[in-house]
Amino acid sequence: MAWASDINPIWRANVDAASANSVEYGGNGKTLLVAGVRGEITLWTVGEAKPRLRYLGSAPGILAARFADGGRTVAALGQWDRKLWRWQAATAAPLPAIDLGSVIGADELPIRFDVDDTGMLGFVASHVALHLIALDGRAPPRRIAAPEAERPLRGAALAPDGLSVCAIDAKSRIHCYRTGNGQLIASLTYELDEGLQSVALSRDGGLAAGNAKGYIARWKSATGGFIGTAGPGEIASPANAVATFPSRVFVAVGRYDGRIFVFSPDLANRAPIIELLGAKSPVKMIAINAAGQLAAAAGQELVVWDVATELARRGAKP
Image 1 (cartoon, rainbow, N blue to C red):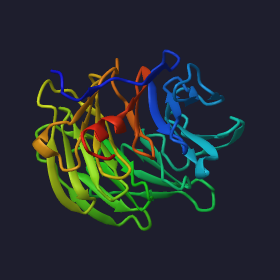
Image 2 (spheres, helix red, strand yellow):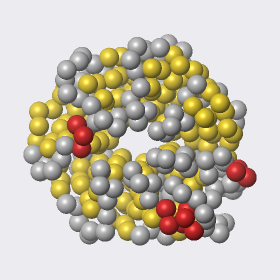
Image 3 (cartoon, helix red, strand yellow):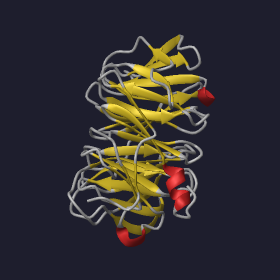
Image 4 (cartoon, rainbow, N blue to C red):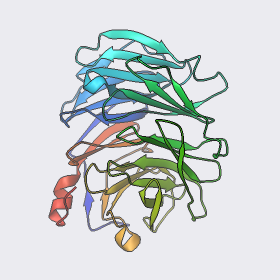
C-alpha cells in the first residue's frame, strides 16, 4: 500500500556490510554515531560517502554507542564482555574502559544502553534489572530492582532528562521509576493482543511503545494519561524501534520489514501521516536530530530522510 506522503531518503551509506545496532545524532544535527554488531563504531557526516572517524579497540557484540560528557566522549557498551568502552569523540583516541562486570552479573543479558541529554548519566537495562552509571565516575553504579516487573524484561528506555526510566516486562506492562531513588512512578498497561517490545520517552515526559504487530500506544506521561493506539492497518510486522521528535511529539516506528511510519502527536485517524521509504533491512534503531528535521534508521544500511520538509508541506512543525 502506498501512502500519499511517502518520502524517499536524502542519503544512505553502507555500514561495512554489517548490521548496525544503534544510531545517534551528534550536537550539530548532521553527524551520526553508528555501532555495528561486529564491534565497529563509526562517525558519519550526512552526505559523505565514507565515515569520518572509526573508534577502534572494542570487542564484537557492541550493544549501542552514545555520545557522553556533552558530546566530548563516545561510550559504547559491550554486550558480552560487559565493558563500557570510551574514546575522545573528536579524535577517536581511546580512553580507559569501565568494567561493569561487578555491576551486571554474568547471568544478565544487557538489552539497552542509553545516555541522558547531559551525557553524564548512563543507563543499562538487562533482562532482569535496570542499572544507572555515573559516566564521570563520581558515584557508584546503582541498581533498580524493579520488583513489580515480571522477568524477562523485553525493552527499556531512559528519559532524556535522566529523571526516570521505564521497562517493559514479560506481560507487556510498562513500569516507570525515578532514577534518584528507584521509586515506582506508575505501571501502564497495553490492551492490544500482541506484546510490547520497544519503548521511548520524550522530552515533554510523554511515552510511546510499539508492539509485535507494528502498532503503537501513546501516553501523555509516564504517570498515565493514555492517548490511544495507532497502526498502519495492513501487514503486521514487529515494531523494533520507536523514537519521538524533540518538540511536538510526533512518533516514528521502525519495523522488522524495513518500513518506517511517522504518526501525529494525537494519533489522529489511527493512521500514519508519513511512510519513510528506502530501508532495505529490518530497522533496529531510529534517531531524530535535535532540530526535528532529519530522521535516521540503522539496519544493514544507514538511511536518512528529511522529515521536516514533508511535515511543513502538511502544515505541521516537528
